[in-house]
Length: 339
Image (cartoon, rainbow, N blue to C red; front, side):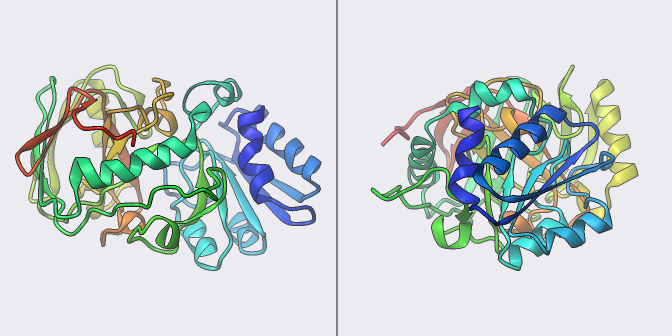
């Protein structure tokens, strides 16, 4: 469990109040292992267990939300994504960090795949994706794929280039994203694992075309057939496909709001060479050369749209053009991002 231990022992000190959040749908062995590690550290550990939330970005129960504000560190291990829910954002704004491995990770996955990556090299790749794939002066992106994606959006003044890791860089320390990565987002203060993505929040209302999600999507998991989103002026106006498309339509109608159809809330690039297909977002969207596109909220990644939900959909083998120049072809980087 060394990969599971590293962020915990780097960030939690003896005597600190550590609140572990999980739900009844998550693999209980994960929170049990985390609790054991925190007890070894000497932290004052409390575990909260609640029913699974209906969607990603939904808050835990009110009592848990209150407890998050009285903790020294919150450890998120729910089957739904809670890092960017309102309660988590409030606690981070108050200076209480989160350590996040939510989204349905199983204990076996803590020993292989994305979590075993060299996280210093991930930081190097994020710098060079910002600097070389996009560039600070990038304006327009176009994405195509073998399943029919042909999608454009503006990234003008939206590209941030995180610094290269220095000699004192600790790949497992909690990150203050505004300070440490030059990232124009709210007071994000967390360590996320497994991870490995370069985030972009495109300019709202600029996207147009067909966006075909072919690998994985929040709530749905591994897709049985592609989902085709028709986007006009940054909003999904049509969802086509098979059973998965029907599930997505129903899900958005039930749990979303008007802004849940805003697209893309983010347009991000995977840079984790150890990530493999698991059928869950926490791993799949980090796969090297993939791109994932979000629906809904983007205030947490540098945008201005707020929604009750945020859903990412992954394209496995995208082709990306930046200002007319091909930078990624079928999931392969055409410029060096290794440094």
